[in-house]
Length: 307
Image 1 (cartoon, rainbow, N blue to C red):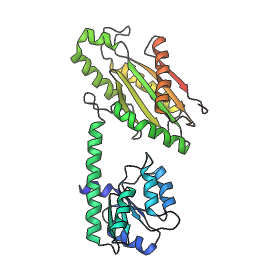
Image 2 (image 1 turned 90 degrees about the horizontal axis):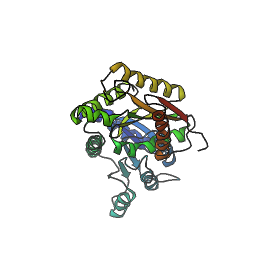
Image 3 (image 1 turned 90 degrees about the vertical axis):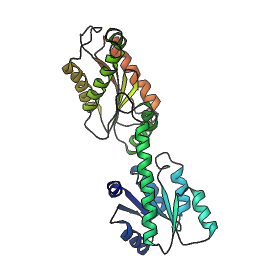
Image 4 (image 1 turned 45 degrees about the vertical axis):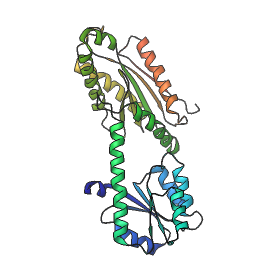
């Protein structure tokens, strides 16, 4: 757990310099510390970066900690971030307001160092456990890559980030050609082995940590590629096609004699459409074109900025 602790980022939202320095001194030996001095600055920061835990002062000018917490809990990007309040009041009414706003815990000023450390550590451990369970829920049991649940959960978030920051985005949908014939000829055990091999070949074609490879359906795969433009998309699609050709996995039911992929790609340099379903539909159309063109083909289209 110590390793998880050292990687965790704690965002301290505190307008008072002295109070911040007290909190920073207690926590900085075990965690990465970032500071915001107001609720508004915290909201802006969390739109581009999501800290692991937020330590929020209740009393701040303009927008207090309670209102900031409520706004964070209404955003898909930030609703799951644990928020620990720092309050000057011992009254039950004040603490009730912290719970109602969406806080997961609170500490009272003057802050006891041992209490703060234990409460932050408890939230970090819960967060680590939650992420491990979430990871297990998002992994396809056969291929050990992401599953459709992951795509449903994460694609809209990735597109919203690209739209908000004006960055490029690309998506590939790929399908194993004549896979039913493969299963009919070799049997389903060999079919499963083929799926695992193809999944690993696709995954090895994506070296960036930001990319995600998903098993979308039986023999269908989706690759999410943030900050990838037409040049990167074309390179990755061609590399994927070449990887399958180099592997030469036998396929007696294919006119090529080995396992191939039909590939549909979609990209935008200025994301306006943040609906993952729309992107998947557009990629599926390109995949359909690749199949109609004889399979083992690549079809790529730009999603216009005004769609």
